[in-house]
View 1 (cartoon, rainbow, N blue to C red):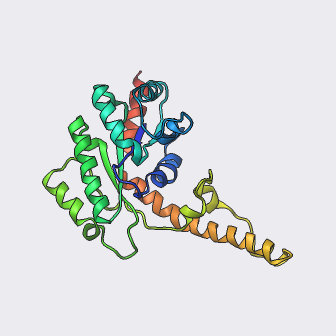
View 2: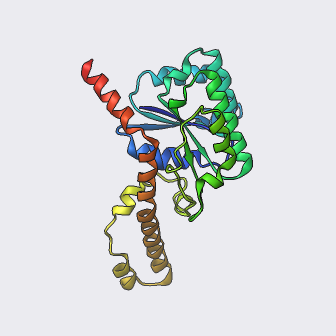
View 3: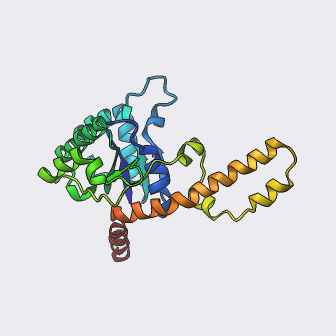
Length: 245
């Protein structure tokens, strides 16, 4: 399965969704960050045609990939998709994270409209409702976006695919930490803390304990959100096609 995580807006949690929601739950998938394509070429953040061409070519060689498209590259990527006619078909599903802030909802609507204009059907565009506070009804928090989709059903929106704000993402930012592995960690940190000498050593162990507890709380939420995306049927369809070939 090949997924693109995309939104015109920044600050909607695209990398969190790509790395922690999708990547661990798609067998054999690798992750590509589109912004990293430009990191060392001295040309700023513009995504150029030859880079997009290389990305398309690479997508033909892999079975499973999650492509995290940075906000600074989305407009360029959309333009290049129009130039490379049919290139949107290289992705099985476009995942669009969004958050309750009105500007981000408006940017999300613009993203969905652009994907629809490219010819991406609603069945291949899925929303992730991110940073939903505990006790808040997503139907109310995302009223503007959902009202638009009620009139123009150009994407699939299941409000059960929701994630709350959680400090663990900031704690592990920039690392390759696997939240599922963290949640399964059976280390007896309390015993280690009791034996540790000095406040610095005790604090380091206490921080690891706190991260494990946060992971244990967030993994079930990620599992439920992923299930609500409805990608499992797509996996089954791909497996059937592979078996027939």
